[in-house]
Image (cartoon, rainbow, N blue to C red):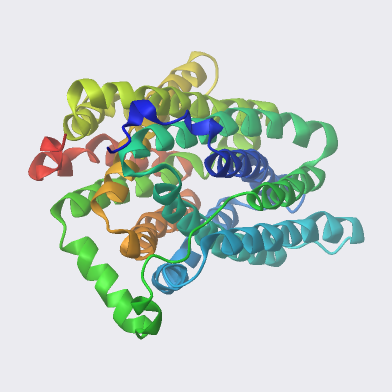
Length: 409
């Protein structure tokens, strides 16, 4: 007799998933500190402008363009837990270099750019391995519940990490705030030692040429209409988000004169939205179905994006923050439902390649958005980037209407 979901223990009582959950939670909490601290370090310590901040944001994600496809093929060949542990340790070392260089008086934008590239590569490998490991830990029938828990925890880390980061930067300075993130990666690596892992699903791909594996992964993704619709929607949203957020340190702190904690609080509102959306995603999908939930959420939240370009003093700060909350609520819903859907329709021996190919385009869009934000900020001002991001975000749900994804249960 097969075991039903009702017969299985709660997810956090499963040792492997619990350790993965804690490792990711700790790492994500620290990462949100650097998300705020690194651009503030560039602006307040090194005097960076809009173009330099945009490039700093873009470099970490553009790294995915060069490494994404080979990373997926490689992860499908090897055991995933050691990959995650090594990338945690390497990222810790990279971040330790920032306060050390600051103490020595040698910190430069060139070093911050190098840190962004190395962190992007490490995060790519960690995330591909982590997402490929989840189905084997919990079973495909519990993917939505597991991803809801993981995404909600990530959103909670956004709230705590970003709001804490603004305060930390104000109290101890941006370089020491980066040190907190470095320590979090070491803690994450320690928890990952308790995650069990079966050997790779198939032995044959390890003997195939990497190029052939990459081509097979790309063909699989673009041959699946559901995955293509999710990819187009995600690419548009990921292009829009950096346009709406990368230049916030320049606008809020540099131009409007708000203290650093206001930037952290504003970004934390986004974490609250993602937390609410990811927590509600499972219930929404049970009521509406995965496909219908995704396009209805996009339609209902589209007008909120048009509040963001009005970010300013007084009530406009609150209005923009409310729009940011609504948009990130939708992101929380989509992150749970679309991630679970992708994992559900992908065979185990293709998970690494599907995930890496998807991330190549999704994170590549984030990188392009960061570069575009920097360019627009330099030429036409910060608000031009906010307006373009708002318009793209408002229409990013439209691809669902032309795909059978909207009929997915």
